[in-house]
Length: 345
Ligand SMILES: *Cc1c(COP(=O)(O)O)cnc(C)c1O
Image 1 (spheres, rainbow, N blue to C red):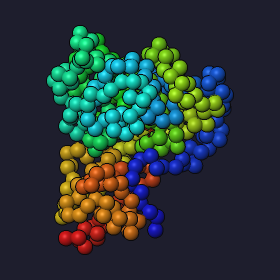
Image 2 (cartoon, rainbow, N blue to C red):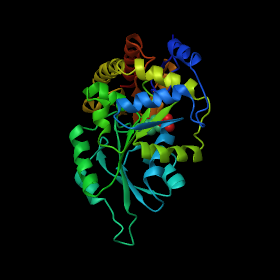
Image 3 (cartoon, rainbow, N blue to C red):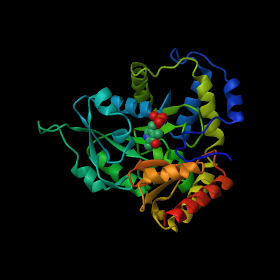
Image 4 (cartoon, protein in one colour):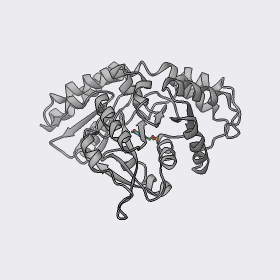
């Protein structure tokens, strides 16, 4: 029987139609600026987000790091939520690549209280301080469990950014998931941020590729940093073709991943020895608290039945629903949990 891989939505392989689009791609040299497929993708995506320009990059990490480098100067500070990807999962990139430090603000499932944001701002009127140069939000919030940052919260934080004339960056690796769940247009999300990073390689199912979006001036500067960071690619139209296919055909279907995640979460929430906070199951991610045994041990037991779920802490597993998971596999995953948990209790 086929192994059920719920470790991440990054594990998907290109579909035959996507491979076909890649094979037919017209390419050029994107460092020299003449790859027609990359140019078309950048135009299409930036238009959907209401931004002047886009920059196709190899990964979400590079996209965020280029944004940070473009917005800041060494010795400055970035405000973000404590569980943010840029703070926890990008290898200390802000310190290494931009010489800036992070001032993390404790949030509630990824949502920062605007008052805390304001309290944590620092200014160059005090020699002791590293002045704030950027406020960063993540939507959906990965560590928060795929939670959606409410529009009101974004607007309130934007007001603070405006008051102090600070730019805002959105890590929108999974902004598509927030968009299909809320029906809020991508452009409406993007309007509150000077820059937005999006990934085609997560739920959308492309093998590689992210994009940084912003004003023409911002992207012009960012392009230099992409080169410096080693992200200038040549015939990247082959990859852009996969991203374009994902962008055209794989956004609306995310709603299916959300429905499967909700079904799975509801079933697991009723099992003894497990706890799932259903309020936080808003998109394609389910965080499972394991009460009876170490999460790693449960992971090992589930693996014996062909179910692979990522332990993200000593007490927690994370399941992510994606393109390669259908209803049958979702039900089978629930059954495997039922079987393993009934042995446990
Ligand atoms: C995956 C992810 C990234 C980084 O993307 P990579 O392409 O893996 O470098 C950034 N932010 C968030 C929220 C992510 O989930």
